[in-house]
Image (cartoon, rainbow, N blue to C red; front, side, top):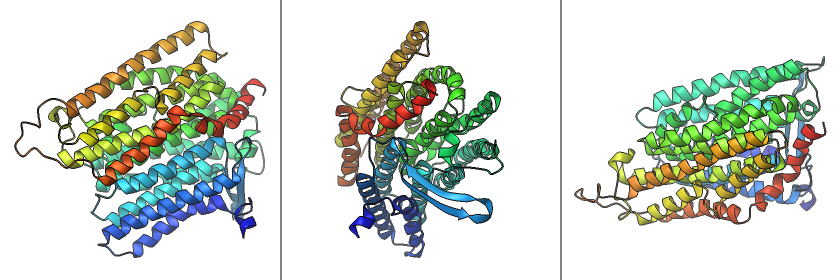
Length: 506
């Protein structure tokens, strides 16, 4: 039995992908009014899934091997030659563990949801399976199916449990994301049918295939549009603030912590690995767009009255560092982008959770109506302040290390002239100066001043044990990565070198 569980023959990844949606389906047989049963059942599934994932990776994943590990390959549809192909490497292991961690905490954050909580938690588990399936797929069609599986739960979570403008936000979300999926599907079909009588969707085979320059550019643009909407890259970002502004904060945790990272993951996994020549051509434009994105989102954020929209724009700004890291085509740049994916996954989810718990107490979402709440909710105030510091890249926090490594990536890049590197770094530095302005002004408007102190019956319950446990659980990895970033970097460093070898030795 021990040999079965510690060899690659055991279908660990299939179990990890299928378990949440299968166990979630059993919730439909639980009683309608058993809210507590539904909540604890979901949390138990998430914890069990995270334990299985961690155990499987500890025994089967070798950090010094850049090749695909724990690979599974089963014939899926005979008549069409479709395969169920799964596998992980240094690029996907961090995002899978991040997905497990954030989803477990989001399930704990969703305790206040009482209306049809059974369906709410089922949709969260469907998202869980879709996200892990996307990160572990080694087949392009399977990747597309898992990518699409993600959209339906988000649309329903937003349209059923959102704010006043939830239907508008849900419609906008599905129009943007489903519209971009058409480009993804065209790219998948085009790349599989090119150059052979037998279509292939195997990512290993496609990574070693060469294309005519024009065709490679067309494929690259198609995939870039699909991933740019999900990341989001400006000007395709406008769905994000509306979605975050209306969604329940547990849904926001999943969106900011994992959904946005799927777009960045796709850029590295498909655009960088499969189309090195086209990526080399487009990388200067990615650098420019990433730099503009940091400045644009950081300068737009202070104008947002809605607390969650302000945090959403900060997410757009921080995603700019990931785009720049990917565009730099250097070892530090790509490592910094991967570290920023993990770092912002924690920080973004934490800020949305604290924004949601604040709303649960004061029932206000507009910053100009708040003020003076620090006296009544000191624990939430403390955690919000600490995590705002993490978001503005305070040394000792994960955001600082990630952004610093991206800077090193630009400096060491051989692709760009010195003057262009200085210009990009200068503009990024302006963006980093704007970040504390909108984050600290957000804290000032929420917690300082006298507005709510002068209101009669001004008293709120402070953070309870559940909220405090959740905040500390998400803060610990942020500080841990900030102090010892090699914990994350060591997982992906060999994979990064193998990806970059296509650019310098291919």
